[in-house]
Length: 533
Image (cartoon, rainbow, N blue to C red; front, side, top):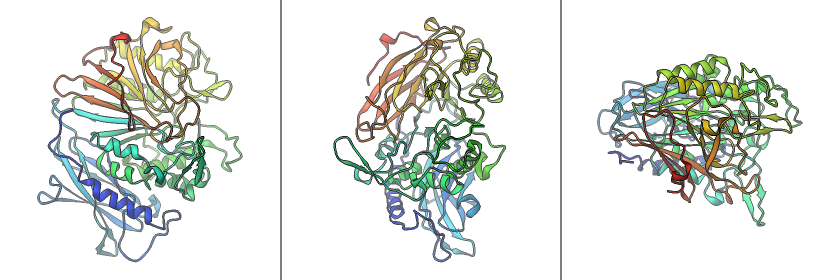
């Protein structure tokens, strides 16, 4: 990828200093919001919703404070400094807030700093917290790079100070991507974190712990505490300051394998309605990510949305949780609700048809052809193990794939996480029971910081074949034994070629595939596909 004229490397020192103060703050386990002194933004900054002319910046205060954001093209803020007045951060939003920056220049590096002011005495302000992002280019000739992964702090594997915490975020930050697609399971609200976990070799994995992570999340405050937990990691704070986030949710933001209307049969929960937990989780998600439509628990806000990143790229973020039907054997011949719901299915078809981007990435929080069981008889994702014609939730996917083919929509590929291993799966009609679609690729990554699991089996309905798989040999392998996975996408501004690399922390590139623009589907000659990089 071509280098950009500006870098964000100098942000590292300030972010690390902030995170050191954060780890030392005694109020983190049970926040006590002071009335004296200056406000502090211990939880750092984040950016998101980046367009050619706007962006959203997030922060959290340790007390009641007014948020201000200053921007400049100069890292030292020597010229063209603008001040954007933000909201009053208070208890109704857990002292979090976002400010929308407008009238920004396209395709430029924007430096920003967040300052918190005491509402009773504006002279009492916090130390500024610095961040940066690049606005979306309007020229096709600008290269694009982004990363994706999912599954953080799962299966009891949290922030381990002995190994330097979530070091994968430091590695990803050094890749200097335009943004990070956080592909669901951004927290594990159903996964308590213990202070020590024995490992197979006799050593102990140590976790930083908090009160909210000591049990499954049920109250709004406990869900909020799960998001705050990850922000205890200095690597993630530095990453957030440098890399915009595009976040989606999956099941563990609420609880494992949840669906609307589910009644919970788990003695750990006093709240038995999954819908009640989901409402609280959704509100906390909106408070802790820069997603303006979800802030304040807005009922009209949608988790599914499209992010347009210039002429080369549109990213379509799906929500496979909010509108799905109950998990079942998935053998019904008619399924109008499916995993997307009728309204979301119509939306993705319409938006794909409207898109003029060279590449159309479908960000799916669950895989299409990998069988993900839920108990002995039910299934959690799309595939249900029957290799024949589409049934159950497969019917919606078949309808979408048919639409893509018949509308001759070019440049589609699917990115996902969820299954805790990495893979490159190619789907082709000549291998499939359902044949009315064009070939496509699905790339799988993760976990970014959770237990590793063996690879799942593939359902032949849409003709998937694994070009590459790397997974743990047994269930819930620790991150020290099975280091995190993440994926990287580079789009060349000259040729339009898109290259996917599956990466592993400390292990470099595991698999590489380059796709050509302007095609419906891609060649299915897997033997000629490069398998290492």
